[in-house]
Length: 289
Picture 1 (spheres, rainbow, N blue to C red):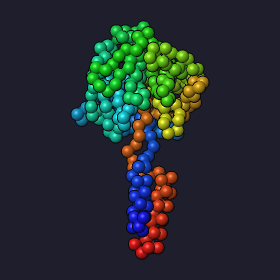
Picture 2: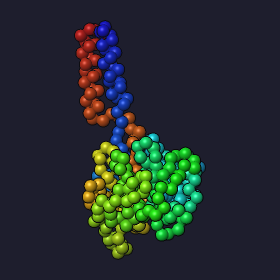
Picture 3: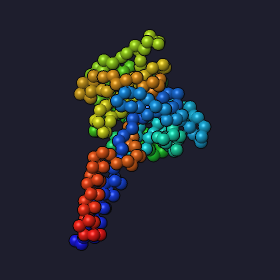
Picture 4: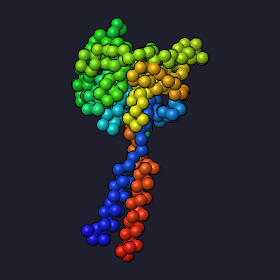
């Protein structure tokens, strides 16, 4: 290998390290009054990103959950019965898919498995009536929704940990695993996290979400009512919940992690990059390149 080639190789390594390094994951939340927020997983504090809009105008979607797949962020619009792809930087709807769900879904949540298969929990049965919930599977293709189980429980949170689907019940007092083929539910344990909202005197639940952090390997859940909301971590082996902090936004109806688009090298990459550049400098000095 020539000296020039050695220098080119070192430079190429440095550029590759820089180009392929990205920031972490952002935890997003969506509220029942149609706002997209980001949530600090250390403090629980929420930050407004923007209102959900369509064509530049606010739209009432009354979202059933929030989920990410293939680098995209999705919410289900219960008012119009449509899957909406949302711009994570603005809250604007950028694409719409009719999944072919012919009944009112009520509240619930949705999530995607790593292979792109989506699952949705509705608090209503497959006629749109109260009585039992419904578990559906879907993709991001039109007409793809299929009922998995029409005698399902009521869940406000769904999330995959690996290939295991977890459900966070609507009252926020239990965590279960769910068979994705049959919809059979297996109780993991009680969360023991119900908290009284001092402003209303009622427990903080009614809205909720669930998401698994791919970077920190932590399962996060939220519980909200019309005036308060909290972020928790949930132990997937016992169900036990631990308070992270108040979100500061009410009616948080779904959680989802999505990779950032920040191309700033992380500290470990900067160390490798600086080493590569020093080596490049040494080659240049030694061989007067």
